[in-house]
Length: 277
Image 1 (tube, rainbow, N blue to C red):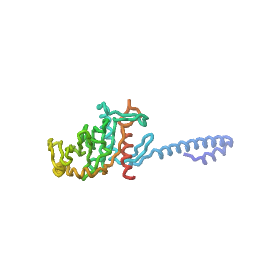
Image 2: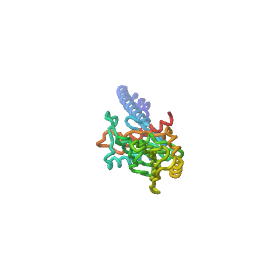
Image 3: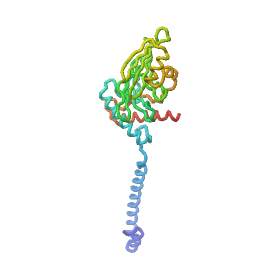
Image 4: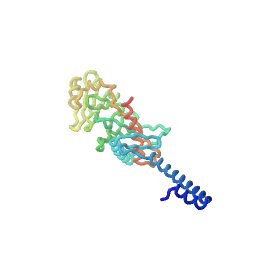
């Protein structure tokens, strides 16, 4: 293809005015082409994403997460979407709503098996503070409709975490080990304050022993939980890391798994930021 300089020389030999016209025309075309190329280069630079990174972006939030986090958030989003469609007591609320979200649509991340991958809790609580959760892990649902305390108050004792709820009416403490088996022990103080009634509920069966000593109660806890009643009572401030919120979406009447994903992403970031504080 002849260069601009070659074209210029040929036309100058013939007609100066024609040359000037052609040069002007070619210059305009050249500048237009440069402008288009610059726009294309700019667009490519702004939208290019490294293959090694996973970039998750929302209207108000952009964050890099690992492939493992991406995968489990997608799984959890699917679980929550199904729960919200089938559980009439669990429903989404509008993002940044001015209304008190109340007792429903509670979601939380909490690592109950201490493998550095948080499990997902989803449910609601009643006016007395008792919670009813579905618990999800990377392989699906771990437990459905467990009754326990708020998961931001789970205690870490030994190699497991526990929920403790108190019923002042009958002076009973309900201890639940948050695990695959979910064994539960209810301890009721007797009137003399030195003996106890203990009821164990587990996959191995249920049994009750009344009027036993603290030492006997400790032995029962040790057999079921691996830690004693005395140890549990002495761990009142050793909380498991947890991020707690609500299922918030832009439009509660019409939302998708992607909306749930965005909500969970923010909750996961809150969970992970606790390690940096």
